[in-house]
Image (cartoon, rainbow, N blue to C red; front, side):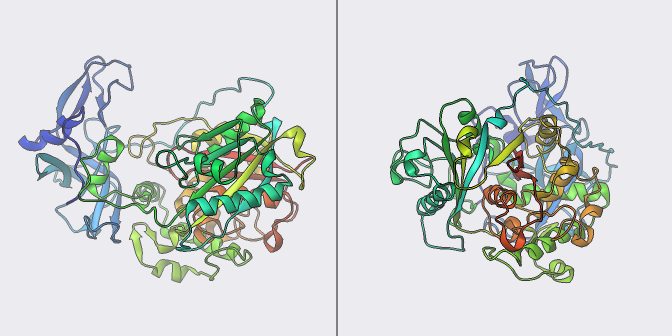
Length: 537
C-alpha cells in the first residue's frame, strides 16, 4: 500500500474532505486568496485568519509526466503524475494523478475535474478529463528584483579555491561513504600542498546522518577519521544548492573564523529513493507528492520539463543534444563512467524513465566523494597551485521554495541566484569561457543556460542544437568533464573541481584553451546557487 498522509494535523481537513465529493483548500478571510498547501499565514497579506473553503474541483493540467519505470512496487507503471492548477485561482496547484483516460492522452492544457479515491480514512484527490473547457493559465518566467550588495567590498575576494580531490568513483563499490570522503579529503589536502594540521574548518553536504558516532561522511565522521579539531564546522542541506556548503565556508574564511576549510560531499548507490509500505503516515512536504507516486527528482523535474516544452514548442531533441554533448566531452575524460559515443537515434530509442526523460537524460548513480578546499586569499599564493579566485556568488531566493506552487516554466529557483550573481560583478555572460552547469537531468542544464543569460528565455533549444556551441571547441564548452550525465552523480561538486582544473590549466586532453572565467552551478531543484570563478590575475 502506498504511503498515506496524516489526518491528525493542520492538513487533515484536506485529506478527509473528499468523503462528500468536495475539494477543499484554505481561504484567507482578509484578502480572499486561496492558499495551498496548508499554511498558517496568507502569502499575500500575511494574515493568519485562514478558513476552510470549498472549491469546484475543476482545473487545468499545467505539467505532466508519464512514468514507465518502476521506482516502487507501490506504483506499477504506467501512471501519470500531473500538476493541476485550480480554475478558481491558477496559483493554487495540486500534484496529483490523472485517471479515467489512456495515459498517453494526458497533455498540458487538458481540462480536468477532481474525483476521490478512498484509502482508509484518506480521500486522495485525483483528476479525470472534464467536458468543461479549461481556463487559460498564464505562466511567466520569474522576474527577479535583485537586492543591491550590502557592502562595496566583496567577501568573495577574500578567499580562493586552493585544492580539489576525488575519491574512487564507480557503481556499487562496496565502500562506505566515510571511506570515500576520507580519500577525497586527503587528496584535496595534498593537492593544495597542505597538511591535515592546516585544516581548521570542515563543511559537509548534507552533513552527518544519524546521532553521534562515525557516520556517512559528515562533520562528525570526518573530524574523527582525519583527527581534525576545526575552529568552525557546518553540515546542512538548506544552503544555496549542494555547493552552498562551499559558499558557507567562504563566509567563514572571509570573517576570519578559519584559514583553510575542507568542503566535502559523498554519494552512494545505497541511498536510492524507496517507499516503505510499513512506514508511518507522512506529513511535511512529502505528503503532497508521495501518495501520488511522485517519489523521485526524476518525477519532479520532468514535470517542469513538460511545461517548458509545451510552452516553447521544444521537442526532445533539445534534451538529446545535451546528452550527446556530454558523451563527446566524456571521451576526453578517463575518469568518466560512461565514455561511449551517443547519437540522436540512440538517444531517442532509449527506454523511457518518466516522460520526457529517457535513460540518457538522467545522471549516473554511483559511489564516490569530492572535496574542495577554501582558503584565505592571503594564504593562497603560498600553496601548491595557482589559486582560483571567486569573482561572485549567486544565492538570492526569488520565488517560492516549492515543487509546484512557484514557477513551472523552468527548473525552480534558478533565476534568483543567476540574477544575483551578475549583480555582484562587472563581468557578463559573454566573458565566460567554460560553463559547469548542474546536470542531474538534461533539463537542469537547459534551464541554467537561460537563467544565466547565455541565451534568451525559450531559446535554449536552438542554442544547443547540434551540440556545436556547447561541445568541445564550441563557444561555450558545457561540462568538459562530461558532467553528472557521464562522470557520475556528485551533488554538483565535480563541476567545481572541473572549474578549478580548467582555470589552473590542469584539465589535460579536455582543457579549454585560455580558460580564464568559469561559472559553476549547483542545485537540481530547490534551492540552488552559482559561483563565478576566475584565474589568479
